[in-house]
View 1: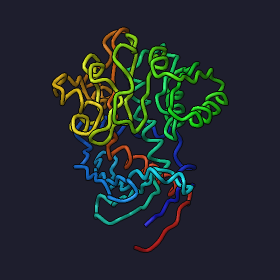
View 2: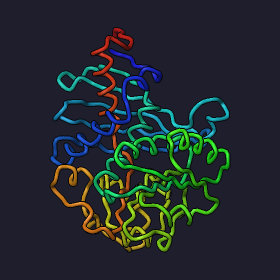
View 3: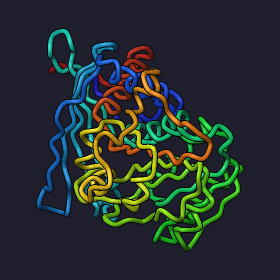
Amino acid sequence: MLIISEDLARRLVSVEEAISAVEQTFAAMARGEARNYPVVREVVGSQDAVFGVKTGADVSVPFLGLKAGGYWPHNLSKGLTNHQSSTLLFDPGTGRASALVSANYLTGVRTGAASAIATKYLSRPDAQTLGIIGTGTQSTYQLRATLAVRNIRRVFAWDPSPANLSAFGEVVRKLGLDYMPETEREAVAANADILITVTPSRQALVQKDWVRPGTHISAMGADTKGKQELDPALVAIAAIFVDEAAQSFSIGECQHAYAAGLIGEKDVRASLGAVIARIAEGRRSADEITLFDGTGVSLQDLVVADLAVKRATEQGLGTSVDF
């Protein structure tokens, strides 16, 4: 078995490589070559933690495996990141465990990659202003990934923590971009060509009337029952795209508009993978509001872990152990 540490995973997989890998596996999902298996996600009952296991396989690559981990909200005070996870890969031909990959960085980069792919295919090509609601750890991944697909010049941001806003601003300015920290969420939404929400919120943070025609929204925070970032009325008027429809209606941003009877399964235009594979159309007009409900699927995690293993093997890196 090959073991890849957190530090090595960071060195092996770039944002650009993650975008390419996740894009390919999304398309494989749409073609029926890759499948996510049912998710296990539970409240631990200790430390306010949530723990989950996501599994799946892509026979086009091929890879097979699982990611286990979750969210420990009190970790920062212990000098650890709140998200903790690891990926275990198996040989698809024999079923033997083949690699253990630290997945904290890879989870961040694959989430940024999914949002960036949605931006690449669904936002207006001339989009130059990015709005971010939530400037915690994930915001930097979102920013760097978005820059890989769009010529962003200005960034508006909101967060309840002034410290988070300040730290994120340092990153934005170092990249040579104009930075506009806001005290009101409405100002962020109203100015954005591309709006990314990436928070653990359980109530709507963005109202329908704040969003301009032609905006693309990547809602990346809702991945558990009860989480919410958008006004259900906003979801109802948008052209909806998903990573996986079943998850969007059960644990994603769509769950609230669906429960209120504002949308049904037929209101999802397509999966993002179907747009990538040219099975379905994406944005239809410059004035359309597009929404990507990014719940996070196992194949995103597994494809970047598989990429890390391939890079480590090519370079003779990682630790090999008998297992």
